[in-house]
Image 1: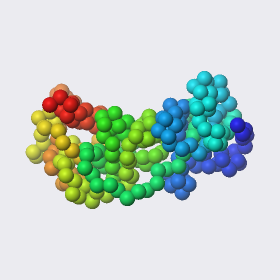
Image 2: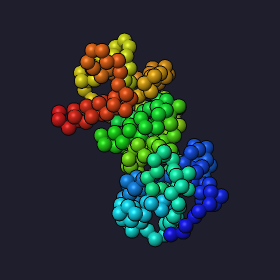
Image 3: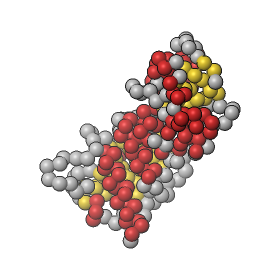
Image 4: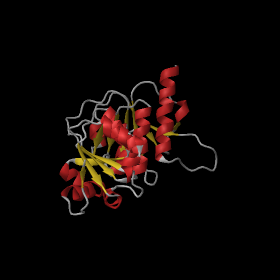
Length: 262
């Protein structure tokens, strides 16, 4: 394991850029995984690691030692003093271990046939990561991110996703309406308005494209117009709305319940 002690080291500069700049992540074609759980999820999914970086105090954690033992000998290993590790960490409370991975390559989009989650302007990294984790847990395998969404492979979204990225097909920065052309299932939008139907009154068997917008502004008019049906989640009186992550969970698991019990 190579020890680095200078902020001027090229690797340190690169790590800091990847941790804090979406532009630099795109330029390098890389991102960083923060924390042993996330790095282990990548290893289990056979996602190649380019390098692993530990803080000096991180070497005292048995979890980190097991991780170092588990990764291949071809992965470069670096050790940083705690102060320097904090400088490159993407979070305020450093985990003690980071890994560098390549961003997934762009590929020609496959036709949409199964259920899919479509997000519009979900900017909060924690919300986006939670939604990805929820989609994976509910058995959805494709998530489309439209205009205004947080960068899917940013360290904070990755951290909130808890490994969901490695089992999902994520399409970032897409034109949602164009991508949904020819979709064989229904497009359901969580939104108020004329004709809105309660979630639990709908038959959700079969493919559904779930359309979700950010809590503040909701779906764009163009994407809302693409919906075949507006859906509302029944709530107790006096409650105005749900966090978008919670709304996604309610809808996807209701679909799963209907699919497996009817």
